[in-house]
Image 1 (spheres, rainbow over the protein chains, first blue to last red):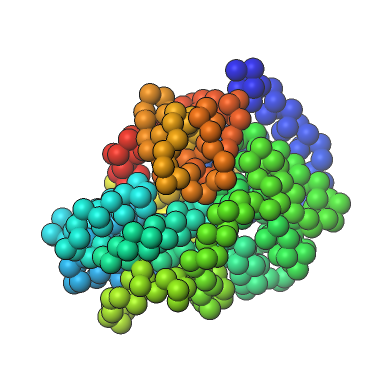
Image 2 (image 1 turned 120 degrees about the horizontal axis):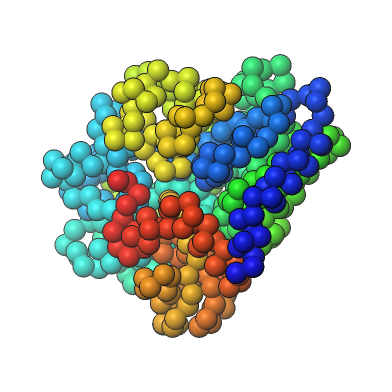
Length: 378
Length: 87
């Protein structure tokens, strides 16, 4: 257990903080986007911002899978459950996200729709096996970490010749989003926002490897450091970003070598490539339509595609009025800039996905940020 | 969704399945995303699938950090079949 006490040692954090303080150039500002909601939470939970010099800033990114799903897709899932007489299986995080008119899956369930929270795609398959007289739809959301389990479930359904199991596929891709953010007017040169580098996701990168970020780092000349989830990982990664920024380097570096390699998990990648293919374009909450940023079920597995089996209606989907979730996800507003935050919008009564999900920035500010000094909470 | 949690392999089952244990909770999970898994290995489990192998030290370290951050019980409840993410 020597390892644990070393990591928990506060002096290690202080040493890293001192090193960062020594290496930052006082005449410049550093803005680093932590892409992943897990990092946002680590930064707040452990007070990492408090250990940073005044000129090092965190910009919260869109890496919360529940948060980036556009309202339209959630409304479609509610419609599948209510109008098509299916058993809709979903990860728990989705249940309380408000759709148009604040209609959520949990409300649809309370009104009689058969919606079931599952821990795993394996549970959804079991529900399909146990209910052969019903159509079972798995509402698949998430980044590259959650995608391989969806691909495996589709292959299992095919192998078992399950005819009542389909997937409503909403899987999205991290590197495409990074490029899109840097292309946006918000962060383009001369725009209002600034990003000097990225803390790259840890578990996503365990699957895809660090290689897929290299093109963006090169093209936009922004350093990327794949960072572990623990507070000292985050601090060490910030130091690596500062060193790159100071040296004018824009490379992909890997702080989380305990788990992430350049190649990633090839077996998982091959399974995904076998079952899923790129969508031309997909809408993200906050980011809008992003080309080549999501996956759909390939033609060979069309029988398992809920979008092909069920026809959902065209609808006018709308965010909850005044909810700043989209701007928070773009990294241009902080949760505390939203007039709903902490007043009408709380984890018990969420108005937007960023307050519902345990990975959302608003939930992080609510849980850890309310008592902080204005610099950190503003 | 939620996080990935480390667990130790107790037994290997047919069809790329394995039984793992963490903090006295047992769970049947899929090892379809890994090449070779053996009894005694430590795996990082995410939504019922092993994503990665870990060293024993890394597993213990991650678990203790999760306990310290107060999220271990939530994760354990989730893998033992009581989804808590949404609550």
